[in-house]
Amino acid sequence: MSNPAQLPDLSPGRFRRFPTRPRYLQLETTLACNAACEFCYQKEVERGPMRMEETVWRKIIDETRGLGVCYRPFLQNEPLCDNRLEDICAYIKRDPTATVELNTNGELLTPERGERLLEIGVELVRFSIDGFSQQVYDITRTGVDRDRVYTNAQRFCEAARGTGCRTEVRMIELRANQEERGQYQQHWEPIADEVQLVPLYNWPWTGQTPADVVHRPCLKVLDEMFFYTDGRAALCCWDVHGRGIIGDVRLEHVLEIWNGPIVGNYRELLAQGRREAILLCSRCDAYGGLKWPECC
Image (cartoon, rainbow, N blue to C red; front, side):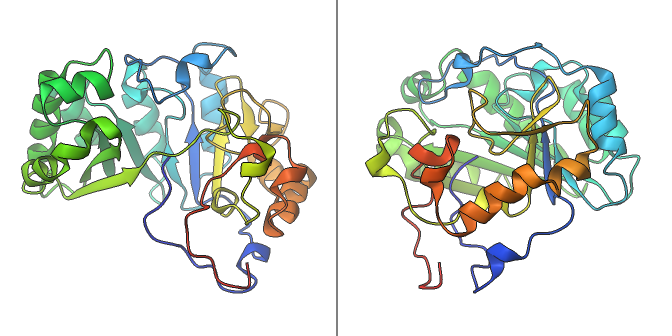
């Protein structure tokens, strides 16, 4: 959920050509997280239920089989807090066109769970690790054991070599870790397939004013879809409080939501850069630092 380092296709008309199915689909299978990081607003989530019902996540997956979707069974949570995660991933992988990606802080990735995920055929595991030293890690990843995370992540990266599962280690650039980013890269580059340093994004409605809104199109509406534990579909993964609901999979087919009039209206506004016309987006400054072509 970070601002991408490289721009996607932003040629003229790109924000008028939306695919008829999502390319990426995120399922918030649980609201639980074992961390309490200062920069994350996950702890402000007040909706329920705590876990997505089996009938709901199965329906989402069943209605998008054969479409070449990349599933991400997490949203505003730690996916390994759900003890059904491996079963959900295995259910997804019954579809030979489907791929699975996971973002995790790594603390709960035991050898047994890691081995199972590799057996299932998960394509990517991305570790969110925002500090190198113990002192800095304790500031950036509150409530998570640094040594356990490093042990689990390193072991999984080594086990994943040659299996078809790629590994990434990602650091959010914070003031606290500024001085040790070089050490971090030097440590992880021989271990993981990719190491990323990414800027800290601002969650919408967390201090921004209408004057801060970026009058540009939004990359999130191009090919991504997001589901809360209760089955509602949200416009954006940064929508902590449900300000941009586009449908409910308990009542509608996934593709009816994706191609429906509600999201279509949102896309039309965002294609014009009219974020101020959408409640959720009216305080959002995402992607403001990117170099946009004149057509956008």
